[in-house]
Image (tube, rainbow, N blue to C red; front, side, top):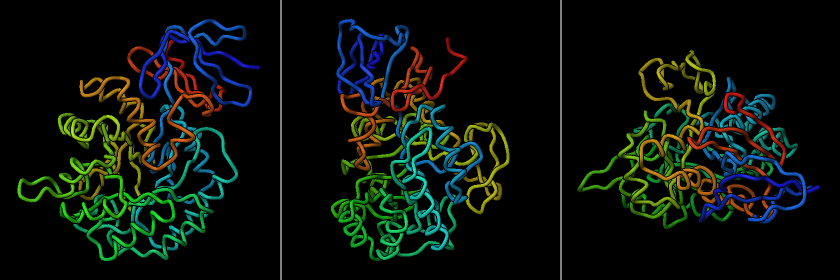
Length: 386
């Protein structure tokens, strides 16, 4: 039996509508929005707004679990926890690691994704590395960095049963251009990250098919007036630019510059969240490194470098609105449709259009999360919001 969401406004891709009604069909998909009250069961969210479920295309872990643990139970725990952040779809993200470990992780994620799981949906794998530059290694182990090898990518895709969607690399590494072309031929999206590349090297990579700049500003050669570098490329080449908007990785003005240069249609909010996300201040780990989580940041114990984040994606949405650099509609798009489109999964998530899974979030006027629905069923309710 069809149910109808009633809310004061609905965040569609290109417009905000409401008040009105959005049908949830028996099969867990969405019908066509209507202004007039229908006959049938009404789910009353008249004081709230409805937006697409958020899509995190760069997340390493949550609630004490990490993708690199190679644990089916851990992946299920991550999926179970992410709806509390407004996330209904995500790409489990790996780190630079030995090839054998990456082989095992890809196989495990693929098996879990094939089986299906409760909570946020795995929509693919993001391989963050290992083909990076040691100059901008960040919180990744340079011992396992190398030039890109297409056979490795083919192995990871085969072991995962086709779930690899995105891989990040440094475009200055030998063989990078041919690797990007090969990845594109396999419907795998190439992203540029942890790189000391020149502007020209980035331009050639984009021409070959790379379409994402990973956590823009972080882990990349900066902007110089005589050598625009990776940041200059991210600002001008018209591709998708990721941002970690936790207030620690990127200054609000720097985030604004990306949004103005790239536009609200190509800016992607991500978390880069590590296992300590959702756990408060604590000691944790990222890969082989010890991490201290304090004052809203996760930092490597041995040198104080940022080690991913503990950001929840709904907080990133709230931050860019509170900083005055995006409207609520723009912020929500940057955390739902844009990330989905950047890796070609916008046919199954990132919208509340007819035929899409009824994966959506309920928000108050301050963009606080009231509830998260997956396939038309309430999965998470924030009891502190009435």
